[in-house]
Length: 326
Image (cartoon, rainbow, N blue to C red; front, top):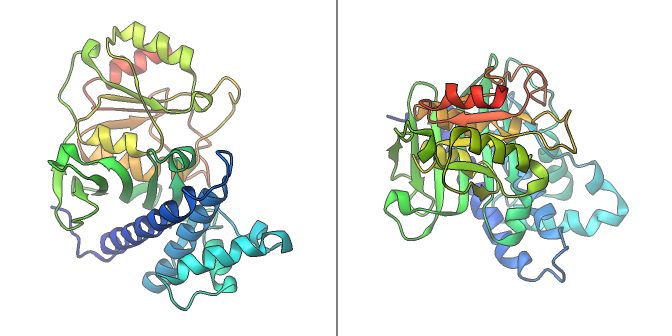
């Protein structure tokens, strides 16, 4: 059972729930009012506001813990962005009434750490384009100790909860090392259900999960990989670490994060993989890089010693690695 009374688990659940509520308000109030399809101001505000809120909550719960986050406040502290900072502050004040522009910047900059023996890592809006489309995005928070992810919580406000027997949207995934993987509706966040990966061992019947944006992956290589395994179904395209959650819930068998041919030297950011990876592992699956090596969270803010990501239900992992290597 998930030890929801453990301080780290309790904090992570609380922080992600609050951040989900915050960004949902921003999405409701700002995305619909965006003047053009290319207006990215809603996701900018949501990104910074969510990181500020989690930074504030971390300061209260674990004042000495490091936070490795995606954002820093330097751009907000320029005169041309003062209105954006005021808007971010106004949203954060709904959850932290004492927030001021200076405290918001301080909370955001808690996320500037380089990592250490114990640290939290946060992606305040994973799947920014999904957020703007009204599609899938996630708030991802994880605790890493001595290079191993110990706690991961993923909030997916737009994910259908049908696999939990719900007709509404919004799912909270949580895992702690040795305690399994669990999910609850965001609307009923104490109602946890244990998750297990799919037991499908026939690669031809595998459901393949991939990035929604073609520029974030290598589509032709995914097609070759699917052909090599004889996968029959079309890949499921989805933004964000919600793919890890679906894999953990048995709603897919293979998740591939291949390197885009435009960025062959790209290395994954740790906040893009930490929370999702422990979900799959605790649900009985496996997560490695494309060469079958474990993800190494000791190399700073990126997975500098890894190339891409492969997550599976475990049963299909070796055959998937073999297909990638060859």
